[in-house]
Amino acid sequence: MWKNHILGIVAACSILLIGIVVNPFQAEAESLNWGFKKGSQEQQAQAGSAFDQLLKKHGAFYKGNDTDKVMYLTFDNGYENGHTAPILDALKKEKVPATFFLTGHYVKSAKDLVKRMIDEGHEIGNHSYDHPNMANLSEERMKEEWHKFDQLLKEETGIKRTRFARPPEGVFSEKLLAYGNELGYRHMFWSVAFVDWYADRPQGKAYAYNHLMNQIHPGAIILMHTVSPDNAEALPDFIRDAKKKGYTFESLESLVNKNDDSPLSFH
Image 1 (tube, rainbow, N blue to C red):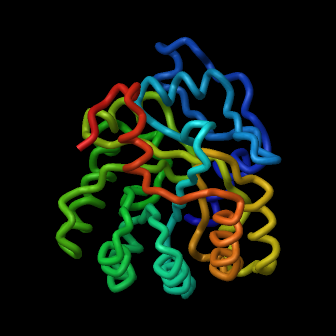
Image 2 (tube, rainbow, N blue to C red):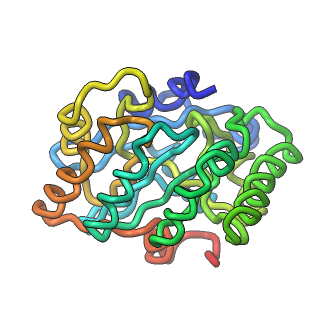
């Protein structure tokens, strides 16, 4: 399942996707792969006007504004590989909030770490229960994926429900965004990412650190995978050096609450 994660993220790491259908009647059912042109020299990543308009219409985000030097850390967790604890250690030491997008498997297999995330003030996001291609599902199956995850999270932690969703592999559709809104979910994409999901192919601390520092920009939503030892090793230095450049780190809730033009209320 996770080896197929390449499908959506590679596009996000390298190119701006072209040829998005703008007609809303066609786009609603169309399967889309999230992608953008990387930011550099602290200039924002750009997904293009079609993606910008589509996400704004449904209260989804991939970045904040371009005037405040604020960034948002997010992590995707499909299974535990021994590197989440040091990531949490770094976040705690640096007093930085994060959102962890989890699958059902992760909640069941790493209960202590999930509880620690919550106890230390981090947000839990909904990465679906079984990590399917959500864009290909019926509304009934979409709802099942999100609600089954929320039910498990409630049983294990007492958290009533999640508020943020992230589509597996970055594959989505307007229908997915719209129906998620109906059920109270906001979709959160990202504007900083790199190939970091191979648990058996570590490339070293410098690899992750350089990718992060080269792409940072005001309003960045940063995606990392916790299976990578590179990320765990690079995170402390990245956070400290980003702070030296004048950046602060805030929660996704803060991002949503400061955007008054968003079409949905947020509770």
